[in-house]
Length: 224
Ligand SMILES: Nc1ncnc2c1ncn2[C@@H]1O[C@H](COP(=O)(O)OP(=O)(O)OP(=O)(O)O)[C@@H](O)[C@H]1O
Ligand SMILES: [Mg+2]
Image 1 (cartoon, rainbow, N blue to C red):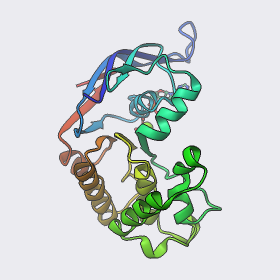
Image 2 (image 1 turned 135 degrees about the horizontal axis):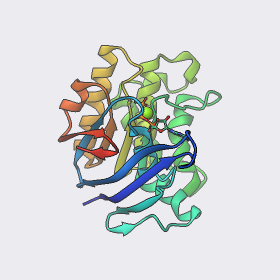
Image 3 (image 1 turned 180 degrees about the vertical axis):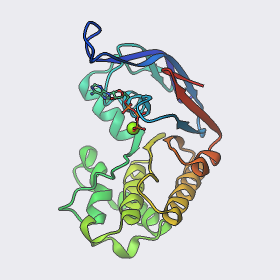
């Protein structure tokens, strides 16, 4: 098992005021190595909140998150930063590429905190991935001169550059047309199978969800 969430509770706001929002309510989840899961659910049901907790970008009010059997809820900030950089790949709905950097620089960025400079192995891997998703020729362009789909594909390559064990994707096809959405779904699916990466994808697309091993619905703070 790669990931286990036990009895996760997460609320926002002050329980005594009307800004109180109960979001995750005794939520449990198990994800196996190589497993691909989709999470659906209405807007506001807590899908992004859940991904942020798994991605250690936010903290649960209570409950335990274990990664490969280790409880990560007690990690220090430094351990968390290392964990996020080495074990996780993030694909956000808005791709969050750096506008001043070329596509090539953007995808190599996550390799820098460890070595300070991208080595031959990292560059070869980046080239392999960029060719695979069909944007190698675009590597010297900046995000402003790329299409939405090309930026999304760049973001997927960036998420894979450190060979993570787990990819977290928040509506990765939400901003794309049908054709680009299909391509990106196929790519995520393919790479996760080929590289043995587990995948948690939040999506409204029944097409993308149908390509996953398991589909959950987030409802009343629990996964069904
Ligand atoms: N930082 C915050 N402070 C207060 N409330 C928040 C905060 N972040 C999210 N919420 C509330 O928590 C609930 C869940 O939000 P979340 O972003 O997880 O929903 P979601 O399922 O991702 O929705 P969508 O499909 O629209 O992206 C919403 O009601 C939202 O308003
Ligand atoms: Mg969301």
